[in-house]
Amino acid sequence: QVQLVESGGGVVQAGGSLRLSCLASRRTFSEYSVGWFRQTPGKERELVAGISWSGSSTYYADSVKGRFTISRDNAKNSVSLQMNSLKPEDTAVYYCAADFSLEIPSRPNQYNYWGQGTQVTVSS
Image (cartoon, rainbow, N blue to C red; front, side, top):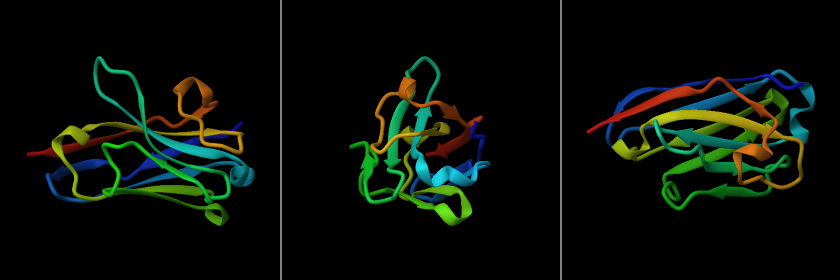
């Protein structure tokens, strides 16, 4: 079992920045690929960024490329999502998810472990 806890959400003005963190309970977290998803009411959960277990591969949705950066520190069992130049359309609940895989899964149902989510609100 892996327990994930997100932090760092909040309210920010458009153009501002936030840094989300995902802390895992398991020391073998380095064996898990991690994705950051977001969800708004009535919409499906979408993958915005992902990082492989080694950190050598990353994925970004087109909507966040050049603005978001995902990174991980396996020694601290954590994955971060630096979000810059935030837009009102980035407003959502952001979830951290982990999967015991070599690649970065793209669909929510491919992830076995989820955090509780953290709200990000970007005001215009």
